[in-house]
Length: 537
Ligand code: N01
Image (tube, rainbow, N blue to C red):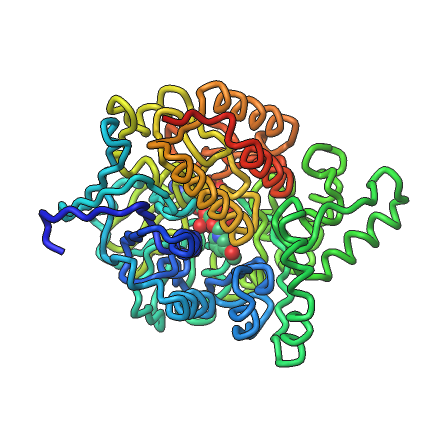
């Protein structure tokens, strides 16, 4: 395609990760002319970019997959309960090949602007290289955690070593032999990197600002017998994941903390702990999300597990979260993370005690002195939810810039799917939907993509030029979102869930906390009632 050419489609899907691939397929199945636009050189989104050492899924393989094709479910074998990045990337490539999705995707194409043209009711997209595309509908499947966040630390340009953000990891990999490596960040990503590279490096210095509660991952291999067993359960599981809070195959327990004796509480926590999954987070005592007493109890249990594993009590204390409750930030699974700090070649620097001051040519300085480094790894997270959307100049009716509208009004998004003033535009995994943080991504992104495909089909079938949510419906959803959010303990804790990891981002819970199942019912009701909260023109 030449840089001045214009290409016309029914729908443009931005992003060819897990959500974008599925959306493309679903729209194409409905006979629509679709084009996918992807910044990377290939499919897989998160699993394409986040190829850092130790990257691994912490939803179980059987829940982290597509449900739309029985053939696919029968053909694909998972090798373990929590597959590593390369396996999930292979899976998504397999899907792209099997359903011949690449023929409708243009790679190496970063969208820089999207303009709604009111006269035609269509979107014009412009890429960084000046190409233009046009379509009636626009689906932004740009990922909730796809825009890396880098800390602003003085003197970075003077550092002579190499540096990498985990979300932009080099495809050729890195050899850490003999290297003095620093890692900033101890969230889900940092934990995976740290526990994986510690045995490979000469010395590892971990710069921790906030300690993390984490659950030991139990990751058995899946053999043919296990896969056969799982396949038997797939039909029921497919139903189940859409009917739970997190889009996984488990839900809040029905047993109440207050009904149990201390011994029974302890036993219940141990049972869930030994499962080695995120079930402990949600399933053991769901009250921990709203009841401070229960939260304190579970937090103490998890801190005790950290103390058991870290030999030096002072180090154990530093690695134990103190100022927030278990589960109010994302809980990662880990494999030997805490024991990593028993190694002689690993140093923990608590940056709340000795703040990072500046980079030097040979390392990084804290208030206590300099740490010499050959490599610095930024496991510093993402501008979650909004980052990928506000990075594009998206202009709706009357030239309204999405970035400016959200800066002025706060994020507004009806069902987290559409924005008033931006007709024919849909978002997957965007703020104010569970998919933004509290849902197993494949479950919620497939649900959203199905809803979007149906909505587009409906709009076209009734001959409408455009659809957008009413301002009233959008405001009501925002109020409902905030009301539920504020009834939980989550807003008390700083994290990417609340936007506090990005300077200047308003503190507000990003994801809808009503649960994936409730959310799906709300979306289905809207569709069943003929999208009555929408304005058609
Ligand atoms: O990012 P994060 P992540 N000085 O924002 C620290 C998903 N995921 O990439 O907490 C010092 O959680 C920051 O410190 P603080 C998952 O949903 C899934 O780890 O702001 N430290 C924090 O420790 C996850 O939640 C999987 O005080 C600084 C860290 O960097 C989400 O992605 C695997 C700093 C950032 O943690 C994001 O996780 C990996 C500074 N200036 C990720 N700036 C699986 O499925 C930032 N930090 C397994």
